[in-house]
Length: 447
Image 1 (cartoon, rainbow, N blue to C red):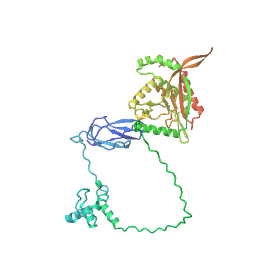
Image 2 (cartoon, rainbow, N blue to C red):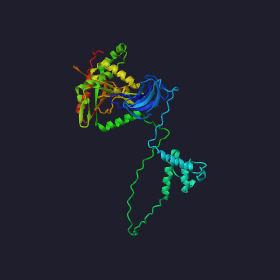
Image 3 (cartoon, rainbow, N blue to C red):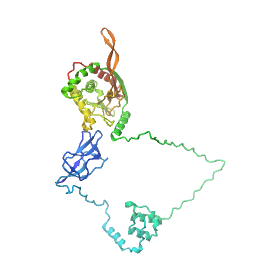
Image 4 (tube, one colour):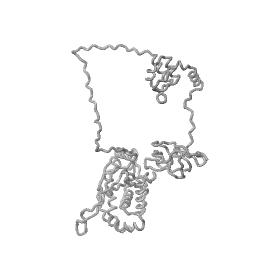
């Protein structure tokens, strides 16, 4: 059979290239069908690339750290009949040099070297570089001593002096030194000295010093990417944040009553996050301008409601899988989606398509005990919502017979939005609408 190419696969609709992170196989290793061969990083996720063929890894065409376009060959695989008997890759055929030396010139140089008697050539130094007979012959003709030859820099392999090096040096020796014209120095009377401009003070950056009590940590690839995107977002969008405190007592009681039966029936954990996304998706339908992006002076209002969910990874980094068409899913469907995406995100098993296409993002900072925050917008979106921790607080309860003080379950919603297209009125009404959906959650809702 023939040797086949393993190409960089298409790992998502918007992914056009990938970076080689690590080769799991080396030339000569046997590879089974669909066995992982290498790890590739895209701007969205790291993933393993399986082999499309069974055989032996014949040649690696892309090195670690190299950025490879989708569809370009990254390795060659020999099928079982094509592989060498010992499993080692065949030696590559040497390619001719780009600018081959003419045969006549090569033969002439070789003849000159052979014709020169050994007694006429300078001897090789006892310790130092190797010099070809041709270089030594030219040095003898030009009266270049061995000490002078030792100081001559070489451009050949391991710093050897080539024919071109010594001929260039000989030509420079033959040129007379340049004659410098005398410079007339004007006589300045002592009574009128020439004023000298004051030198500008040089700004010297203080040396960075670390004591033994500091740890120096190099950012990994994902952290560098997050840092760059966050800085870009603050530079692009005019961030404004509005806060609303919501009474979610009904939601807390509903979940407490359904968490165990739902676990027994569906085998899934029932958290607050699916309900939060349900409320956000409905509010995005009510205020479609929040579900948009900006390109120059053009506003693009999205028809699909794709809600991204920020997930903290064990490494401390952050990743945002996307729930597509969240407004068309019920609470059961949202629960399955949230649990599945969160688990596979932490296990690094998401596909690039599952991280693309988001139109709005939700970050549940309450899971870390945070009350409120000022989240940074994920470009090119125009808004993001942070969900604070649910806390028991004393609150005023309005009744038909008067106001009462009672214990309620309250949480803060922090809504950051792009003031270029979303003013305070729209940004505030949107987050208030989300709070209304949560506060008015029906205790009789079936799941």
